[in-house]
Image 1 (cartoon, helix red, strand yellow):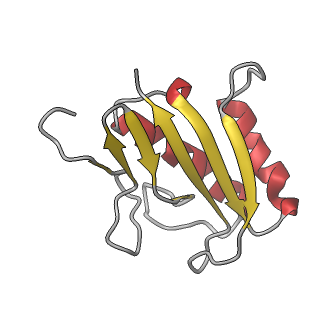
Image 2 (cartoon, one colour; image 1 turned 90 degrees about the vertical axis):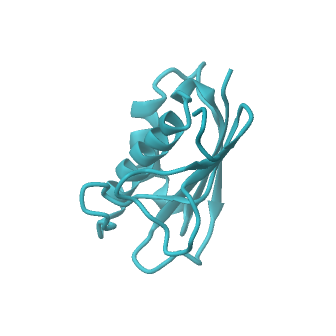
Amino acid sequence: MPGKGRSIHVDGVKHGAPIPMGARVGNMIFSSGIIGADPSTGTVPEDLESQCVFAFANMKTMVENAGGKLENIGSIKVYMKDRSQREAVNRPWLEMFPDEDDRPARHAIEYDAFPPGVLVQLEVIAVVA
């Protein structure tokens, strides 16, 4: 990232507000809200399962675009409308982090102030060595 600013972007995924997908400060990566938009179209699918898959994929891309890897993620907050969404969140979570002894911390938060059509959102903190 030499010569670049601290903002981190994910091609095809944008916020409605003028904010980046994340920021890198020193060896720390902080995300904004990472939504489950399809980066090939920029749109958010209607179904929860697809949004969860895209959200985790967008999270991975954001961390990699900042010079990190999945192993650098220390904490993930999952914002969801209600606890009934856990199964849809757990599927891509388990695919991305299959080893129960090598996962980041995770905290689920019930939240109901999403932009229209958004059903789930991630927020991460990572430390790059």
